[in-house]
Length: 347
Ligand code: NAP
Ligand code: ZN
Ligand code: ZN
Image (cartoon, rainbow, N blue to C red):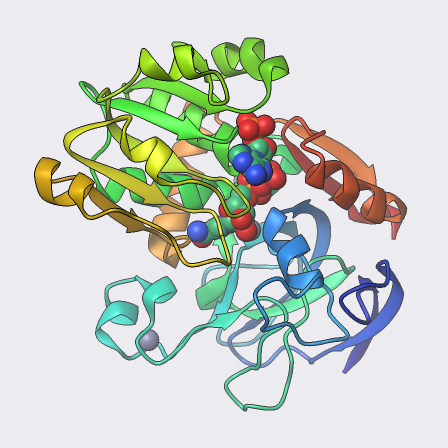
């Protein structure tokens, strides 16, 4: 075991604070990584504050990890010491079910293992995430990261990137589609970049008037303020897809009106209340409501390679780890453009 520095939440209400954790010695298939940058996802806040009711403490959050390989096990084939590497939301899965065999580890039929606040397959060890100086992960769950892009801007691709890329690939979103991106935060700003890159016409649907110029800079053709009824009317029955990245409970029916017939509302945000959805929208207009979670390992690698080839990265504000609690408060106020990334050298 190696003792490494980290920042942890001890319970759902006290601020994150310095902490030490143990990392296992790398086994034959393991890679030990020195973490250079870790993005701050809104899911980290949901987990730290136990919004979903499945949190395990003490908890070291963080699942948008990039770093440098320190050491590899003797059966590791893809990596060597010194390579750049990425780790996202998953560190294990059953590896045997149909979905794992198809590279859809995020839908593992026997249960995946999340990067933090989750039991490993031994049922006892609790995973700890990227707000730490090192991590040890099986090579199947480690991604290759190009050195062509700035690493701090690549880190958010490991969650915000793949979470928005994967549904766009699944629903074949591209040229000829009108796509609404609901919520311009960490996920939302990546959704705009990908949808625009795939050739779709993008509209940002936002509660924040101050984000209009950024929305257009990121690739949106239009910006609609969702609390302005007149602006909403102009996009009624308009979209082929709405990608909903809102991080809290909200009125879904309001956005079903904006979908054209035979179109789809894709949920990515984690709302805790049951949805209220009058069947009339789906029955009379063949509208669908669907959801999507992150992406599998092969698709995450494909997304990273696509980003390297097309120069796509996140817009980030790099912070020292000591500012993490303040960063959480700013995310909750919507005061972030558009992802905080922790410089782990400050730990
Ligand atoms: P974020 O950076 O905080 O962005 C969320 C955005 O939603 C905000 O910037 C804001 O945009 C909008 N918003 C927030 N509260 C709202 C409200 N009450 N009504 C309307 N709009 C509101 O969060 P994120 O990191 O992008 O994550 C978004 C959600 O996705 C979180 O719930 C997170 O847990 C979840 N998530 C899911 C997956 C997955 O695999 N499905 C992966 C990662 C994250 P405007 O200012 O533009 O309105
Ligand atoms: Zn995330
Ligand atoms: Zn599986």
